[in-house]
Length: 330
Image (tube, rainbow, N blue to C red; front, side, top):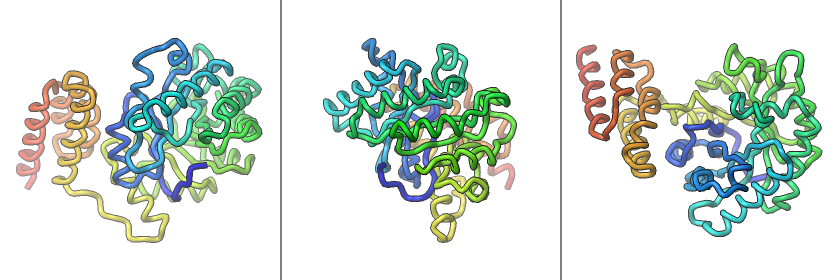
């Protein structure tokens, strides 16, 4: 497996973990980053958009591409196509591992049988893992992100984890909810711990990590080797460095002041526009900006401004408004 420092990884999130967020997360201490989901079937059908999700790598941190699908032969071919893309464009499409998605709860993914739907069929999940491992033939490690089960009656996370290990998977990331629970209520740390004790390969815990204390508590309760941070990193890339420092026994850096927070938000949006063009970049920036401003005075009004942004100049108007609220508070 790619050598990882003990700390916090950026968990894959559709529509969020693009190359801009990966770069910034790595810069602020993420021990690895993972792409948005890439469809194996779309790759095999020559889709032009899917390879673009891979480009840009993950900054200075190890970077993985997340592949989804449910047909072993299609997943194998998708993995081979990813390796071919990496060979053709090593400057832009380099990645260090392939991550198989067995955790996405979205109906459009689970409906055909992919994502967390694979938890309903552990034998098939194992075959998918084996197909990808065999397809890459040791060129890159294969990892898996999964949930603890499909529902309360189908708690197959540990069985799927064992089958993945037997197939040659190098590492697992476990989200502590069933598919039925989606993202609520709180995670089941004891079930992550059960998966951890069921295998001998490294396991990273995922779910509800929004602070250093959340990460420390989750590691203590699960015995896992690290944590993967998803929504908790939105608008808060500093969390990665804080967790890494805490685990190393070092002084945890203070949360950034408003000036730094706004500067990183502006840079994030600027790079989104540079990568994707202003039209798409500013629309995607709406949710990112709202996260960066979470918890500030006047948050409701600021969120409304975020939702209306169309041009980069709108972001500067938003920032000016943030400072006015700050001045009013003082």
